[in-house]
Length: 97
Picture 1 (cartoon, rainbow, N blue to C red):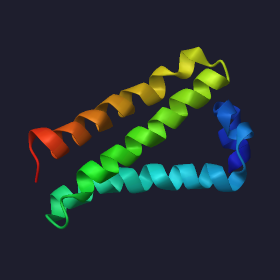
Picture 2 (cartoon, one colour; picture 1 turned 30 degrees about the vertical axis):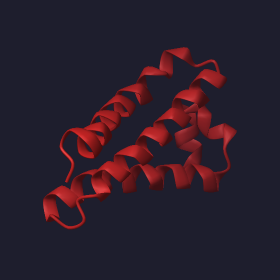
Picture 3 (cartoon, rainbow, N blue to C red; picture 1 turned 45 degrees about the vertical axis):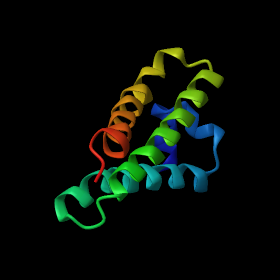
Picture 4 (spheres, rainbow, N blue to C red; picture 1 turned 180 degrees about the vertical axis):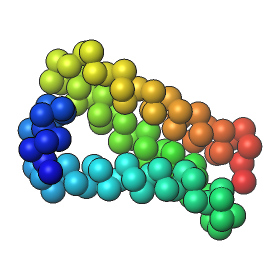
């Protein structure tokens, strides 16, 4: 429930319930897009596309934390941002499929 989520994550109060659910769905789909193409060997081009989408999503998260002056929470989205960026760079340019 959004009430419980808002207790732990103050950014939830800045967005509508639909937006919060869309952000969560985008994160889940991005994670699946990183894993499933490699496991199933179906459409491996989806891996770098999902990684790029996650980079954009995490940039938005970093911006939101900075805008809300939650500088202590900025590191949480930076870690997946860097990992997704490495996957995107690796799959688009270093080891293209």
